[in-house]
Image (cartoon, rainbow, N blue to C red; front, side):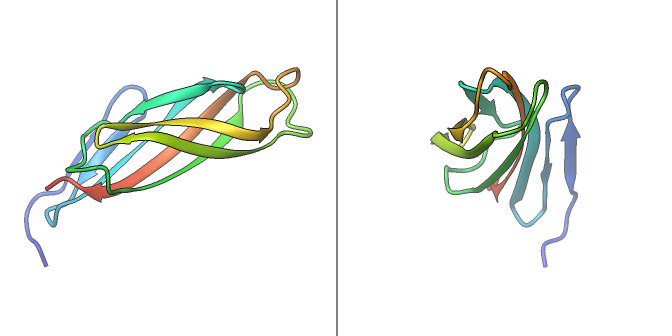
Amino acid sequence: MATGTITKVMNDSGSGYCKMPDGTLICYGNVTMPASGTASITFAAPFVNDAYGFSATYETLNGSVSGAIGTIKAYNIYSTGITVTIAGEMPSAFVDRLRVSYVAVGSWK
């Protein structure tokens, strides 16, 4: 078991990271995006490479969720961030903004 200090940082937007002594890095936060667009996420701390786990959920910020079914798709995967979009049935006439909440887990060393 690694010993040392756990570093935890959170910025004003609510995103942040936690560095563990064993090299584990957890980055988390949220980003607002248009329902029919994309969002670029920049992690609060970089991973050592692009081999990390990423999970996200979304919620509507205005409008109706009736008939809104979408899947978060990730691409442009880098050690410093990732780009996400919503694929599927997202009727923009009813929903125009989403909040995507995410967590990424990998290594910092």
